[in-house]
Image (cartoon, rainbow, N blue to C red; front, top):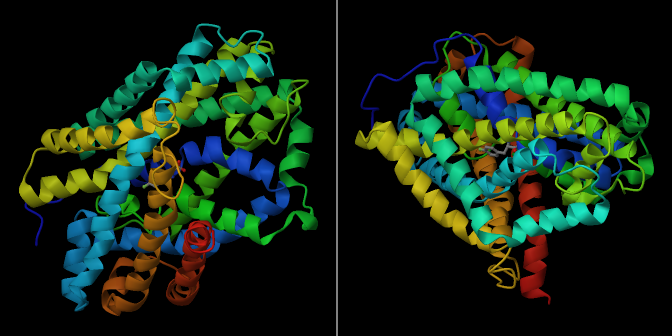
Length: 460
Ligand code: PFF
C-alpha cells in the first residue's frame, strides 16, 4: 500500500515543533494539569509527572515520529508498510486503526469542552464576570450546561473550525495555522504570567506548586501523573505519527521531541502558577477546586480584579487556541488516510469525518442536560464513557503497542537511518527503555485506568 501521491513535507523550519507542541498543549495543560496538581499536593506531583515525561513520554513520542517519518504516510498505511518491510505480522496495523478511531472519539467530546471556552470568551468580553461570587459563577456555568441549544451551537462551531483547517490541507491549513496560533498562544500566556506576577499572589502560588511534601506522594498520585504525562503529549493514537510523516528527514528526532516535551511542560507549569496566583489573590474562594477551577473559580477571580475584563478575555482566547491546535491533530490521521488511500479530497475527507465526530458528540452535549441521568458504560454518563474508552483504554493500549512494535519489531537499519542525527548516548538508552520500561509503565496506566470498572463489574 504505497501512498497515491508524493508526500507533503513541511516547508518551514520549526513547523513540526509548532504543530506537535500545538497538539500537545491543550485542555490537558491549562484545564486539567492545574487542578490535578492542586488535588495531588503540588510539588511532589509535578516531580513525578516530570519523571514520567522522561520515561514514557519522550521515548514513545520518538517512536511515533520515527514510524510516521520512516513510512511517509498516515498512521494506518504507515503501520501496514512498516509491518511489511520489517516482516512483522499484519496484526500490528491495529495501531493505526485504533488510533484513527480514538482520534474521532476524543474529538467528539473534546469539541464540547472546547466549545465552552468560546462561550467564556464571549462572556469575558461582554463583562459578564464582573462582581461574580462563587455561587453566581457556579450558576453561570450550570446555566450553560443546562442550555442544550447553546451547547450544541458551540460544539458545532468548534467542529467547523477544526474541519476548516484540515480541509485547507497540510501546508495551507495545518502549517499556516500553527505558525500564527502558537506564537499568539505564547504571547497571551506571557501576558497572563506578567499580570499574575504583578497583581496575583505569585509567591504563594509558586510555593503551592513547587513545595515538596513527601507525605503527599501516594500510589494514586503517581498513577495520575503517569496517565497525564501520556495524554498531555498526545501519545498513543497516531497524531504525532501523522505529523511525523511531514517532518523533514534532516531534523533530529531526539532534540525535537525534547523541545516539544519541554514546551508542553512549561505551558502547563506557567498556566498553573498564573492560575493559582490569581485564585489565591481572590478572597473567599477555595483552591483545590477540581474540574471547576477553570470555568467556575477563575471567572470569580477575573470578575473581582482590575483589568479583569481584558485578562479574562486573554485567558479564554488562549485556552481556545490551545484546544484548536489539539483538535486538528485529532482528525489528521483519519483525514490523511482517506486522502492518501482513496484519493478523497482533503475537503471531502475532513467534512465526512467532522460530521461523524459531530454526531458522536451529540450524546456528550446531551449528557450534561437531557441525558444527565442516562447511564452508558458501568454507570457512567455518555460523556464519561467516551472519555473513559478513549483516554483510559485506547490511548494507553495504542502507546503500549507502539513501544513494543518499535522496540522489538522494527529493523535496526531502519531505526538507525531515521536516528542518524542522534547522540550515541540517546541511542543506547532509548531502545531498552522503549522495549522494557515504557510498555510496562503504560500497562500499569491501563490496568489502573480500568481497575475501578473491573471491580465494579466483578465485585459489586
Ligand atoms: N494533548 C492534548 C491535551 O493535553 O489537551 C490532548 C490530545 C490531543 C490527546 C491530541 C491526544 C491527541 F491525539
